[in-house]
Every structure is written in structure tokens, then in C-alpha cells.
Length: 352
Ligand code: F6P
Image (tube, rainbow, N blue to C red; front, side):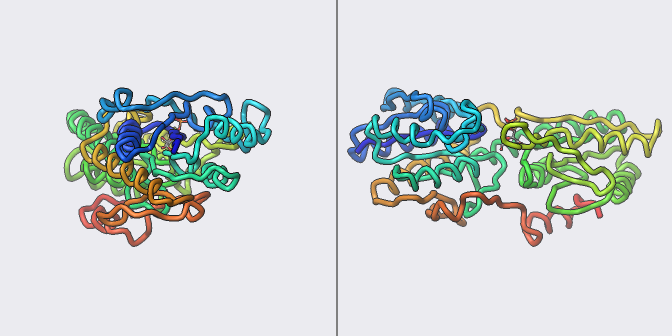
């Protein structure tokens, strides 16, 4: 058997640990070759691949990023390098010329959507869910998320000491796209006074009043906001990319800072920090190293057991697999009845 492996979408801590686990588990089980496709589906289009063996992967457990490289726009069905043309036939021909029997695709919702479609062309796929956003359907926790939450919590703790010293309102913006998982868990872990996520509506008035109460009580306020959040008073004009319409969500906190500052004038200073890609870089947490290794081994087992067109996933404390077509094209917001929302509300972190 000859297995291909690629990492697609934005990078995240734990990708290398999955590459390591898939490769070691497959080779240990007698698979003759594992080949890494470089930069996600772009490697299939541009014909770039490299052999993966034990010396190449053994030391990768704690390394951030992905040694195979990645790309979050390389869609063979709509290729940016050819004016949006469908080059999936060429990509499949390259995979066939390598002699691949199956492709392990490690990525987020975009990668799973492409992988599911690519699998239907004739190269079977096993998916592994990756994203700091934690928003992949069918999977309760993706690797990378825990590491990102730790960065948010650390940033909030740092902001708290300067907020307290100056008696300011500090806004910290997290990633997460249209899901509020990072802001919610990061905000709870970092003790934010207010957590703002896209799934839960609130008004500027409610937020301002909430902050004013915290200032009256403790002299400052710490706000953790998700990049995808919306306020009715501050509608966002999001610009889609000219090629594929992909929205850039970063920057949600800037108009919020301006609106709060306008309300309070010189009485309360408001500052805004954008955490950005710091949430994606660096070494994976211990939790993510373990989850990545579990996912990688589960993907190798799924390959060997003859599973096809499925994605490994975490359900409770068990690793299962789910059909890829149930995952493709959808995402997983924070449900309104999620326990963490009740928890955050109970300790006064949700305005409104
Ligand atoms: O999906 C992961 C993610 O980090 C999102 O949270 C964020 O909106 C986006 O990727 C940023 O993408 P880019 O790296 O292209 O700026």
C-alpha cells in the first residue's frame, strides 16, 4: 500500500504530531510507503511531494506548524493559479502517477469539503479534523484548539495587570471565524469580565453597562471578543476576497473600541489588542500532542481497516469516525444550550 498525506488550510499546533503518528503507525503496520504532499492540495496541483519515513517524522511531536507546508486557498476544483479553472483531473493524475492508494487529508472544514469531492473522483480519502477554531461538524474537539485557548488565557492574564494598573477597559480579539469557541473557552480560562461571541446577541448598551458595573466594582474591565461577533449598532462591512469571496474577519474590535471610547470620553480609556496569528504559532500543548497522536493512529487504523470517505473524530472521550459527506460544507457554532455558556453566564461573563 502507498498512502499520501497532506495538511491543508491554516496551520495549527499539532499538525506535525499527526503527520508523525499517521506515518509511524502505518509503517509499523507494514504499509510500504508514505508520501507527504507539499502545501496541501497545491502540492497535488504543482506536483510536489516528499517521502515520509521514520527518521523524517520521529522528532516532530512538539514542533509547531507543518513540515509539509500548507495553503488555505488551494482548491483543485477552483484553482487560483489558473483563473479559477477546474484542475482536479491533473491533481488526480499526479496522485495516480505517484501510485497512491489513499489520501489522508488533515485539515479544517475547507479541506474536508475539497477532500470529500476529491474522494469521489476516485482517490479514497480519510480525514483528520484540524483547526484552532474547533468548528468542525461531528467532532467535539480539534487539535490546535487547546493550544490557542492557552494563548488567549495567557494574553488575558497579561492584559489584566495593565488594565488594573491604568483603570482601563481592555479589549482582546481572538480568532475563530464565525464560531465563538476560542473566545468562550479562552475568556473563561483567562477570567475575562465580558465574553462576546457571534452566537450570542447583545447590544452596545448592554456591553457598556456591563463594563461600567465591573469598573465600579474593581476599577477596570477585560473584554474577550471573537472576531466573528456582531453588534446591531455597529454593522460590519466585511470585504470578501476578489477571487473566492473568503472574508477576512480580523478587526472586529476596532469599531467597538471607538464606540465605547466615544461613550466614555476621557473618563475611561479603552484599548484594543488583536491577538491574531499568535494563536496559531508555536508548540502544541500536551493535550494537543496527545489528541493529535490519537487522531493520527486512528486515521492509520481506519486506512488499514478499509474505511473510506470518513473523518476520524472525538466524541466524549472516544475516537470514532464519521462520513466525510456529513462534514463537508458545514460548520459547528457554539450551541445556545452549551454548558460553557451557562457557566460563563453564572460567573457574570456574558453581558445582556
Ligand atoms: O481558520 C483558522 C483561522 O486562524 C481563523 O480563525 C482566521 O479567521 C483565519 O484562519 C485567518 O486566516 P489567514 O491565516 O488566512 O489570515
